[in-house]
Image (cartoon, rainbow, N blue to C red; front, side, top):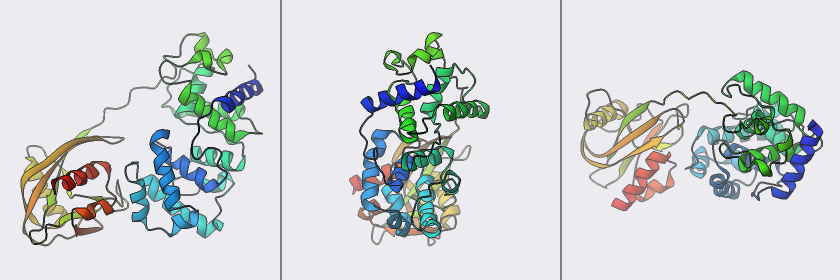
Amino acid sequence: MTNKEFATELLNWYQDHKRQMPWRGEADPYKIWISEIMLQQTRVDQATPYFQNFISLFPTVYDLAEAEQQEVLKAWEGLGYYSRARNLHAASKMVVKEFNGKVPESYDEIIKLKGIGPYTAAAVTSIAFNKPNAVVDGNVIRVLTRYYGIEDDTRSTKTRRKVQEFANELIDEENPGDFNQAMMELGSEICTPSNPDCQHCPVQSGCVATKMAKTEVIPYKSPAKKKPHHIIGVGIIERERDDKILIALRPNDAMLGGMWEFPGGKQKDGESIQKTIERELEEELGVEVKAYKELMNLKHAYSHFSITMHAWFCTLISGEPKPKESQEVRWVSRDQLQEFPFPKANKVLTERLLKED
C-alpha cells in the first residue's frame, strides 16, 4: 500500500464512520484549540460537557482573557490536570495582546503559546488552518507501530521520533485536518489497545502487525515505574462563633496551583494521622488545633503518585490562621464551598460536608 493509498483509504473510512462531536467540523480556531487542550488526558465523553459549558462561559478568546483565573478553574473543576486551564488562560492573554485576538496560523508561532506542545500545535494548525502538520498521540503511535511493525519501546524518544517521521510522510497535504482526526479516530475506534477490530480497518492490507499476528504485542511499552503512595491528613477547622470553615488557596506555581483546599499534608513515619494534621496546620497556618473526629477518608490517584486522604474535624485552640504556605486563607460557610474550584479529592470532601450540614 502506497502512502497515497493509505491516506485515501483512511479518509474514505473516516467520512463514513467519524463520530459526531461538538467541536468536529468547527471552523473557529479558538474552539478547536479549547477542544484539543481538553482532550489531553481526557476521554471524549468526559470532555464533551466541559467543552460545551466552557464555550458558553467564554465564547471568544477575549472572554477567556478577561476572565478571572478562579472563574476559569471553576469551569475546569473535575477535568484534572489543572495546569492545562492555567496555561490556557495565560495563553489567551498572549493571543489578545500579541496576536490581536487571532489564534496564530503558523506552527512556529502557536507553539510559543503557554501550554501548547508539538501535538496541540499540529492539531490546531492542521484542523483550523489546513496546514500539513502531522499529529502524534497515543492513538497514532498505536496505529503506526502496528502498521509498520515497530517493536521498539514506545517510551523511547527515538521510537516516537520514528513514528513522527512516518506520520509526516503519510499525511494528506490537501486535507491534513481530516487526516489527523482520522488517524486518531482509527486508533480510538478500530486499532484499540486490545482486541483491535482488524477486519474493519481501512489500512489492514498494509499492516505488518496484522500479517505477523502481533497486534497484541505491538506497540511495546516498557513497564512504568511503581507510583509512590502517600498518606495525607487534612483539617476541617470550624469557627465556633459562626460555623464557618477554613480553606486555603494553593500557590500558582505548585501542583494544583490556583485551586482551593483544606489545609494539611503528608504523614511522617510513626506519626498518628491526628498528629499529622495538627503539625501540618501549625506549619501551614501558624495555629494550634485539636483534631477530634474523622469526617472521611478516600483514595485518589494522580499521574505520578497516589494518596489516601484522611479528613478530620478540628477545633482551633489558639492563633489566627495565616497563609504561610498558601496564597490566601478564607473562612466560608458550607454553602459557599460550591463557589470555589477544588481539586477532585477535596471536592469529594466539600460534597460530604454539604450532606453533613
